[in-house]
Amino acid sequence: MSVIERPGFKARYDTVKSSLNEHWFSYLLLAPTVLFLLLLVWVPFLNGVWMSLHQWPFGSGDPTFVGLGNYEYLLTWGPFYTSLKATFVFALTTVLQLGAALLAALLVVNIGKFKNVVSASFLIPYTMPPVATGTIWLYLLDPSLGPVFKFLTQNGILQEPIYWASEGNLALAVVTLVTAWTFWPFMFIIILATLESIPTEYYESARMYGASRWDTFRHITLPHLRSAILVAVSIRLAWNMTKVSQTIQMTGGGPGYDTSLLAVFLYRFAYEQGQMGMAFAVGVILLIIMLVFIALFIREFELEEAHA
Amino acid sequence: MSVRDRVGFESDGFYKFVTGVLTLFLVSISVFPILYTFLMTFRPANEFYSNDVQLFPTNPTLDNWTFAFAELGDALVNSFLIATGTTLLSLLIIVPGAYVFGRKQFPGKKYFFYIIIVALMFPYILLIVPISDFWFTLGLYDTIPGLWISYQLFVAPFAIWILRDYFAKLPRNIEESAQIYGCTQFTAFIRVILPMAGPAIVAIAFLSFLTAWNDFLMSSILTTGTGPRPAVVELFITVAGGDTSDWGLITAETLIIGIPPTVLYLWARQYLSESFEMS
Image (tube, rainbow over all chains, first blue to last red; front, side, top):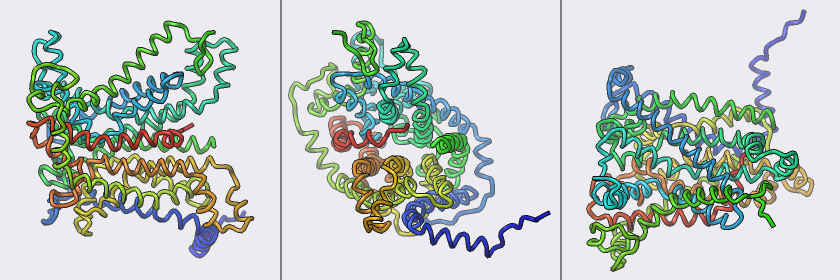
């Protein structure tokens, strides 16, 4: 019976050395990317976890070690659960974005005339800074000055304007819808580009065999879009969760904590109260929720690579 | 002759009508809010507060625009410097990285790519707290280079993801052929591969510029009023500070900040859509 020896230190050192010799050019070109991302993701992240165990004031000032105190405080504090609930409701914005993007892409791909104008106009909400579009909606939906409520009350559709910002559920709905309006074109771009890459012969032969529109959508279009949709949805979910500007602009996270999504909560702790340790503790909880999606994304990526 | 759509179905009247209405609806909700606001900026203050809802101003004026430009002034210059620097730095970092991921095989490739994926999906907002603390220590807080570096977090992972695909789709064995004709690995990359990836690289440059110009999160936290505060943050502070008495000025500022990225984006659209394909 032979015993398989595990490679000793020397042997492993040699493998590393020979792959460096052989692939030095790849590693050299990769170095800047890896260095920057380590500097911008991992160093701050580990530092942040350390911060979350402290009472950590912004800028200068001495941190005090509090162990898991910040987490304990959050988990026993009512508004934290309000925030958690708001975050899950707000996540629906991704579903709305997908619906709009899928519909728009399917419409655009079959347009004969004005295709460019139509798809360009779909992009416009996404191209402006969210702070700019947030301001526009804040003006349009202003209960006393904005045109939307002026129009509705003057035409007798509403008796009086709705003061949505002072009512929790409505404020959350407005924030969710405005976020959907702002970011849906991102998914539209990805889905349209992928739709256009499906060879038309597939559709032609399906039609020859008598397939209906629904059949071709179900058996040709959707399977081809599968990975584009998964990628777009997971990226958008992650990114939507970190958007704070429009929410803070439109509701300030209120009334009370009703629209304080976890990200807004974090922002309020950090920059209204200067409690960096507490802010990061909120961040860690947000990250734990996001890890589920990161894991799904990586799994999808590995499936893709296995196919390629 | 009957009209056929792209996928070869005959378009009947009802189907055409429904798709037409839906298209028109989506176009109007995308464009109309911005168009309406744009027309509002030409109204003098008294027309802003009148009770009627009409599209066109009766006495158009450019006052809002001139005041808005005066107000934003330096902040627009800051935005431009921040976005341009971010773009240049991002190309230096992203293009070589994406090339390696797209076309080279080497030990550990998969694990290096995980670094990219995790960075792509990471809830950025939580990194900004320690980054600002870190930048404070390094002296990068409230400086333009500090923003150039930190925006790579937003730009690099997604851009590498896209550009990697583009590089991978270029014909195989180009490097080997180039090396037969006397190129080194390095000159094959610079002189053969890079020009072929031109459109995708242009797309990445636009994305970087727009990300930096449009961002609020990073710049609001890493700059102060005495430092290089960009226009987006300036606008945010005016609005969030509750100073919304002069909507004419605010909407004009909004469009001054919003129109440049829109124009750039629409101009770069063909490059972008080519690179966004995910099959």
